[in-house]
Amino acid sequence: MMRKIGSPQYLLLGTLLFIILILYLVAFQVRVDETAVVTTFGKPVRVITSPGLYWKAPWPIQEVYRFDSRIQVLEGKMEEVFTKDGKNIILVTSTLWRIKDPLKFFVSVGGVDEAKKKLSALVRNYVNGIIGTYQLSHLVNVKKEELKFDEIQSKITQLARVESEKTYGITIEDVLIKRLQFPQDVTEDVFERMRKERERIAEKYIAEGEGLASDIKAKADAEKERILAEAKAKAKRIRGEGDAEAAKYYDVFTKNEDLAIFLRKLEALENTLKEKSTVILDYRTPPYDLFLGKYLETSSSEETLKGEEKDKNAR
Image (cartoon, rainbow, N blue to C red):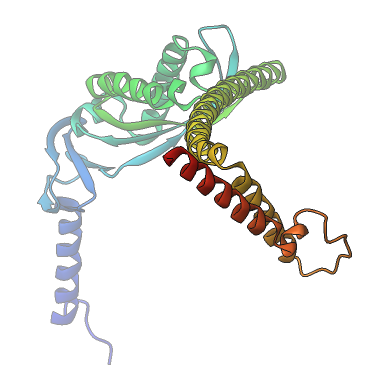
């Protein structure tokens, strides 16, 4: 059997569909990463920045415009910019932005597409203006302390942020120079300047090295002279001590010349016998004549003569 249209089941289904339709027309949800602007006959009357379920009058009385509240990225196009010293460079920027004031954003730009156009023009103006106050060497340099890349990006970001918040309700988190290129003539100038800078640094290090080498050599020469002077003084002192000691022995030897000759021969004999070599010589050849005992005889005779002279003197 076919059920009648007016049966309770159809009435219940129709009621549910009607309720769903009414809810769709008067209720809306705002997610945690969204903000919303509610308009009445096209005029904004309410701004919602917290997530949750909200109510409104059905369309066309009221309408809801949702916007992404997360940070978004605007990729710029390749732009030719001139530096303060007249060098043209080609760069690409990347802008991080988000909606700060949904009402101002809605009134000034209406939507994301128009906001991107406005932001692109605004960032381009500040990039041209800021980079035009810096030399090319502030962007490309072998000396890290002379680079002002971060300073340039910071200035562009700060100035662009102030205007974007005031005009469009958009806050710019950061403007980054994503890519930096040079035309052929500028590239040649950059490499030439870098080559000269490297040569200057190399010459500086060479000069410092030569100066250091000269200092080391001078110190070494001074140390050498000091050591030589000390050695000469010490040698002179030792020689003087040796001469003084030798003079003492000389005085002793002059009192008894025969004893001195005997000791000299004895020393020479000891030195020759140390070599353990066989030598055939005349036994009368000094110092081997000591083996004949002549010195002892001479000494005895001299002692006898001296004794006789003493006796005569005593008489």
